[in-house]
Structure formats: structure tokens, C-alpha cells
Length: 118
Image (tube, rainbow, N blue to C red; front, side):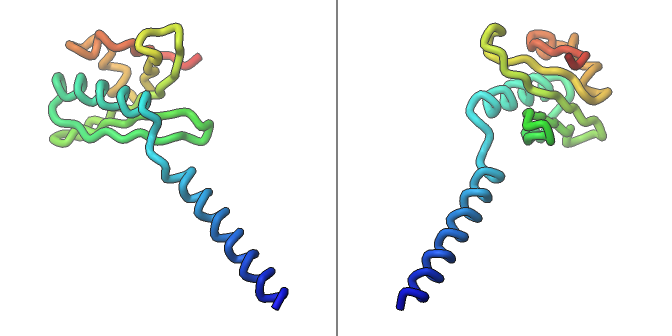
């Protein structure tokens, strides 16, 4: 009887650990990241047409936002850096060539976009 309880408890523990790991890896972006992605996508869409933007953590646990144009082959990739001293609490660093060309275009010029990584 004790052996069955121990085995059951072991499986429940393993399932909980696997579920937690799955939740951490699949959990949605924090609200600041989601707001930054929405704003960036809106501004890029104004100048370059409809976009599909996604955010994901890179291997350094930093947030990257990539916006792909729906009607062309352009891909805009940015690193999002949170900084409480920078209103609205973050800034972007252009990673891809297309992204580096956007920092002074139309509405995008109102975003804090840097072109060199620190």
C-alpha cells in the first residue's frame, strides 16, 4: 500500500514539474512587452503596410520583437530593452538591416530606436 502511494506521489510530482516548465516556456509576454509590440507593429504598418509581429525571448532571456510585412519580404527585428528612466519604460535596438533603416521613417521616428547594441 505504501509503495503505491509513493509511486503515485512521484508521478504527480513529475507531472507538476513538467507542467510548470511548460507554463514558463509557453507563458505569454508580459504586458509591457505586449504593449511595445503593439505600438511598434502599428507604427511600422503605417509606413510599410500590414505586419505580423511576434515577440519571443532569445537565448539571453531578452525580448526580441520581429515584424514581418504581409505583402513584401521585409522583416523588422528589434531587441526590446526595459528602462524605467526612459519613457514609456523601454527602448528598441534595431537588429536587422530593415529595422536599422526605419528609425527615422514617419511615425517610427517617434519611437526610441537605437541602431547599436550596448
